[in-house]
Length: 159
Ligand code: INI
Image (cartoon, rainbow, N blue to C red):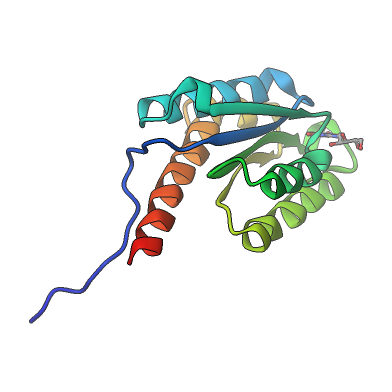
């Protein structure tokens, strides 16, 4: 039986430019997601000077900033980072909903990987767990999916 030709992105990246778009709200959590994302990108081959950081007031504003960054065509991938915590607001559902909805369409429209590293959690404790403690670092995980997608798209373009 012949082998199935399979395309999969590698986990080491060369010469790619990344933009992290991070919200300042709940910065005591988001700062750890940003650190985790930068660390993961550098460990997987990105140069520090090829990583830029854009900051928004809150997660609600992330989609517009991500869209503007995507439209600039200056980057190979974008990593959106934020923390929406249910306990801290009655409008959790609006903020989280608009953030997810807005970001999800940008990748397809602009043909650029947009990794989603925005925590939507019920409590501060859950956020802490996902920002570099017992449940890992979701910023780092999102960054790694960006690395993989950059390599996958490069592979598919050459196919
Ligand atoms: N923004 C967040 O990023 N996380 C939150 O948990 C949050 N809460 O709880 O309200 C939040 N609100 C601010 C929002 O993103 C906007 O910045 C604000 O509504 C102004 O447009």
